[in-house]
Length: 587
Image 1 (cartoon, rainbow, N blue to C red):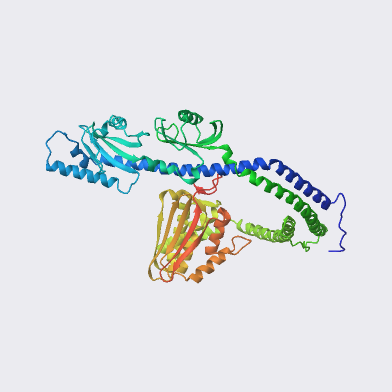
Image 2 (cartoon, rainbow, N blue to C red):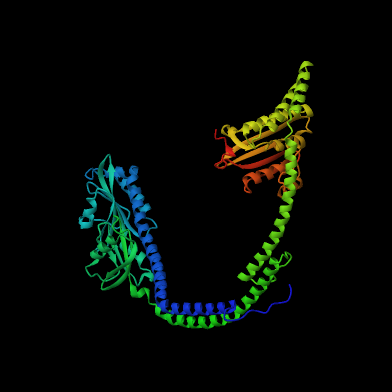
């Protein structure tokens, strides 16, 4: 690489600039961090505490509401089981009988089964319009108990709902029993007040103030001493129309979490003082200052060390770039680091290698271009003499009454005329079918075999546009390598269907099949790079055309079983680009 140049170190050197910038960034960052550390710690701890408190309140609220929802389901089960309960809804004044006793026993067993293994349910009552009482619990409910305000209010209900008497600890989920459009009784699920409120008596919520309100906004439960302003708290949270936030309550700022406030069901509000959210912030403040001071010292030492190392690699890279500038494409930057300079060095080496490869590719393309120009000149010769010759063969065969030769000559003429005269690269599937049918007509004359060609195509796909002669090479392989050796019964089936935005084409034959090794060999040929793009034949040619036209996500594969079948499956796009070059025929 020539004589090594001395390192340029001075006030204007990159090394000095990097050193000064690193020190300025380190000092500026540290000072800024010290100024905002307190507020950042407050915000971090506050957010963390808010998140955990919200999760615990949400957990407790789900447990609370799940018990209420279960009570509602049990109540609905009672009133809908009318074959069991309606016979007991009759007149209470009728004479007692053994059947009446059995009915009462049956209803009690039914109600008792609904409340089994549910500790939060004390009783399930069914009160008829005439005052008859059926219950699940063995504790007798007297008529005087029915005169309690909560019971009277429950009997007057006309729809399902929750009633409670906080002083007495009574919680009822009520639902009227309807028969023929008339209320004939009332179902009451009596819930255990302590079990319901116990959902909120967990350790993480001991520092939070819990308020639970009924559907009408009246206080159902609180774990703090009542001050008489609980209704105002409910109204204030409802007016904020947000699940969480901050408000002023009892003379200090509080973080609140509200669930279902103002939505017609049971509502939960929890409060946590702002000072409680920040109780751990002061303990971390001193640690942050110590970390900041250490960061400044470490940054200064690292700046001195890495600026020297970084610039040494820069000098080596610069020397390599100067060699490239002089025209030496064999040079490589010898920088072995994992930092950005190392990445830049490897990119530089890759760039030089790509430049060499591109130059070679340009030479190859120029060669291919000359070959293509010669091929174009050859194809410009008008093939009328070939058509005329085939027409002559067809005419002579007709005169000599050689019908089979006449048909083969006609098919060959049509096939050549379509392929050579049609300059469109893309044709419809119907046109591809005509190519294949003409080809099969010719091959039947050649092999003299009894084989069939079956088409199974979705009707709308006949207008689907594909590259010309895309399926024909696969059909040819199926005939020559698959069923040509069969004396009879050979079948080639072409099945084409649409699956969402793709079209699946399967060409299957019941020929001799092939081994897995042969399949792997064919697939490996497809994966080989061919700069001309179309020099391979058969399956590899079809695969290369598909990928060149549609992209790497499309292509095909082969399935086969020796002595049984071979299936070539092609995957193509159902629609093409906006220019209409492929996809469905826009005509």
